[in-house]
Image (cartoon, rainbow, N blue to C red):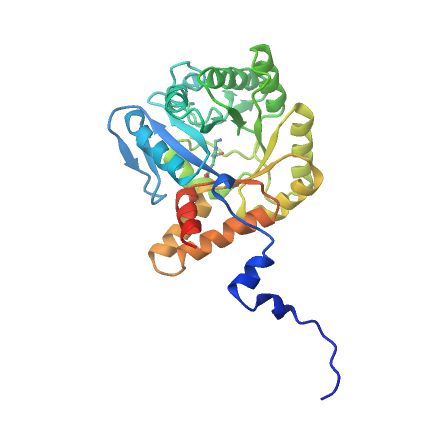
Length: 326
Ligand code: PBG
């Protein structure tokens, strides 16, 4: 035989245990943050049609939900509220007895060890569905900041451990940091949706949270999917303004951005595996076109490999069960 020079990569793939030995990325229950949707009323569990397996639940059913997460070893939830009433300025967002405030108070009373993250935005609470105050068809930046800071403070008063502002107004981290500090909450971290694209992948969420804009779109505040350098500028501002975590959203089509953010900043990076990414897999799995377990674990692993330290995902409960099976 002539002397061939090449490397034998297959040596390290010979068995399950050999592959486990050289595996670079691992998923564990503590990686996941589970999103919940809370609604007013009693004994209500509304299945979200476009997100099979996801329900909106009323507060009296919340304890059982939270117990299930704790039993699985999931340590953190992010809370989205679906208020009964909306108005032009989203006042239910910063009402001390708003749906999110009530939910957080209840969760922290029963499960003090769960890390409760409050999504801080106005779009679920405004009748026009935009994330800010509107004047003559324009979404106003600076007047919106005061309302966000008020919302964050009322969420922390209710017991939130982390504030996650998702609204993409300029200066939102600075305004919220200032508001929290003034209220004596300098110990509460901000998990900023630093890099949030104007994405069609949010479609199913807007069903779940009743938060579709009633006119126009979110392109004057959320980012253009074509841009990469802009993502670094956004993240840089949030770091300078005092963010403690950086979210990249959506996740799957933006793994390159996740890696950029990881390489450029020394803060924990959070992938938001959004509703559209979830529902596409659910639909394909229901048709028998893909293996749900394998495809979900593969995509969650890809997010960690791309630099995510944490993943907000509707798959969290399933993923933990599957990891335990493996
Ligand atoms: C609110 C918000 C959105 C999501 C999280 N917070 C929707 C939006 O910006 O329209 C999307 C989450 C998902 O799609 O899973 N601003």
